[in-house]
Image (cartoon, rainbow, N blue to C red; front, side, top):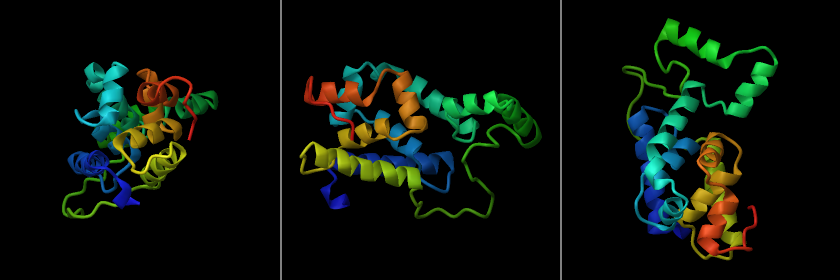
Length: 188
């Protein structure tokens, strides 16, 4: 599959690995792919994000992803569902962070002496985004998988990246309109 990735899509994947390294996480997750995408200034995906007004709000996206990481990667919908059962995620996060320090519930797996740099595997969620990008490209009859396909795949897979993008006005439909024109948007 990776042989079909464009130069821009490969750069996003490498950027996601760099995001994981910077965060000190053991795995590359879907949110790392999102952060790598919004950090780029070239490619069709970057063009689409700029056209949708996200270029000036990258810090807001990063902050929203960071906040979701503090909640152990739970979406707001999951947090609300737990609240409906009388479980306050905010209270749990506060208690855990009081006992173990800020960011204790984040997916970061820093541990002195235990982690060695090297290959970071992709989580199931990140792999699903890569496969989703292939599906989007195939559905569009595109011969290559570009950064725009990765971005479209992030919007259709439930989770933090799709939620954060939607909160910032970026949905599959809005991206498809910008990238392909009106009337051609089909969810992949």
